Length: 258
Image (tube, rainbow, N blue to C red):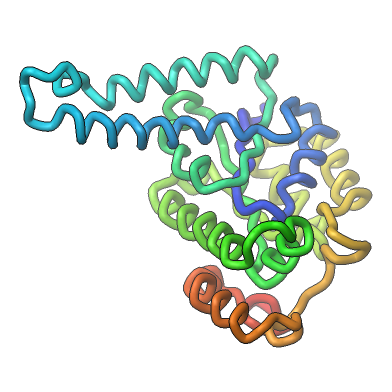
């Protein structure tokens, strides 16, 4: 019996789209982009902030008598019911690539107790390079910060997750070991043999989104990108700690496995 719903999380430009494509081939439904469920975390923070300011230690103020956890649970239920109404069937996925989605995972697990999570990751060097080319209108520091917050938030949330409800998939492995990654995902999601075969076929025939031909496969050293001294300093200041935490290097070896 295949598991679900499957929540694809992680930093954009890390292989999330190819995971969507692959899950479709084995019978999962869902939208190409979710970007709705992060509201659970966004609204939850707003509730805590507002009630903390408006109702703290003031018995004659209505807000002081509102239970924030109860309110957040009611909001979560509304959002969850709406999502369920738009995803017919037991096998569906959601792809929302931002830190608010990752932070919402504990509350998502209350709404969907059988849910599982695939964290798509990619080394900061290749991820930021791809972001800069795909979204040149955004600031370089913003790209670095977005990658770092996704990675650090995942590490924080992962620490409290049972090991059987999540799987980490690196785009590096998706490209270079499609068969191995297919087996890992198939085992994780409990696929039947026919589903596993279709999954492997999808990963072999499709490639992660590319900003230019062959770019998804390219590996770079940090000093080969032509970034300015200021950009290199910004990258190291924002990304170095998370690079180290995930075992990534700054050279052509990609990570400490190779």
